[in-house]
Image 1 (cartoon, rainbow, N blue to C red):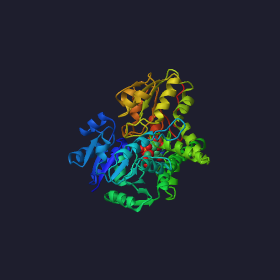
Image 2: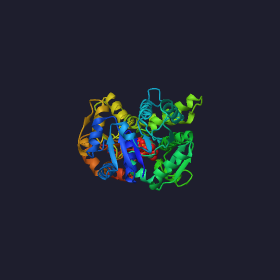
Image 3: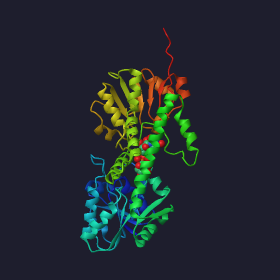
Image 4: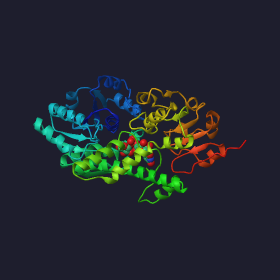
Length: 439
Ligand code: UDX
């Protein structure tokens, strides 16, 4: 059992802290936000993440998990200090390291005894060396810095922590690597040891590669539409080749969220800093830009003008099982629809509050999918929540004025839509047209 301090209780920090306490360590999570700390002490998780609240409560009550605003208290007796603060994107695409720097200052100030400083936050290659130099300059207490990137997906972060494919440990000393190995052993996940810079790069390269897979399949989807093929079958057929793999080949309205958009831009910048033009990744970003606007293009083709049309927006979160709206396609679609003179009626099972803050004021929010669809000219399916996947064609037919559906996540069977008489546009699959009877 080790004593661990985790700085930052965003989704990475809190999930990491809770998971480390679950495997038996004594964990203290630090956040500068007093209100957040007070509510976590009452067992309220500041983020929506399946399974997190239950584990948080269990380990808090067992005395293995605690929360504080005091760095000094958290660092006392800590064997490891995990940095899990945000690295938001600056206007120029680079990572903003303000929070990392402030944590480094706190560590230098309050470190009392040897500890391993573990960087969980996604940081540009070389940042851990910088953190090390910074702390070294301001304290005589010995410490090591280790890069230990996370690969959690939002919405399944708890599951991913206990079922990851690998744990990457980038260290320049054997002592720090062995402490990290010991901490992580109970997870039973293969550990990959490397140097610090390679570990930092693994995180960016992994996210950039997954984003590339998505943009690639989206380009194939565009071709499928023009050539009469079906991208779902194409992806399935490709994915059966183990060298390609079936995952992350779902065509749709692009990737959003807190990682892919930010990390791809940051990697392009990182490359630029060493005079390397990352042409491939730039194209990946460009494809995603187009993809997030795809449903508007399709709706324009169908209606000619969107002025005065009422569009039911099903889903606002960037993906299901999260209330996260960062870089969500829905925000772009809502803005463009309103600009084009359409009325937007939006519904999301959990992400309506954050959506309200980002969407134009003209957007109406309703509290059920039926109210969103009721009387609308068309529906935009933006987030593939189960609740939407379970909708029947008959429901669309009965609620929509004329059943027209733009599905950004390929949720439904083409034949069933055709049989129900729904005009159905999806991504990379043939359009289902309805033969209008001539009167
Ligand atoms: C991602 C990485 O998966 C994770 O390893 C990293 O730590 C953080 O970034 P996350 O952003 O939570 O996780 O979500 P993920 O499930 O990976 O989806 C990202 C985006 O890609 C979503 O907008 C999703 O809709 C989109 N996506 C994903 C596709 O469009 N097609 C796919 O096949 C997969």
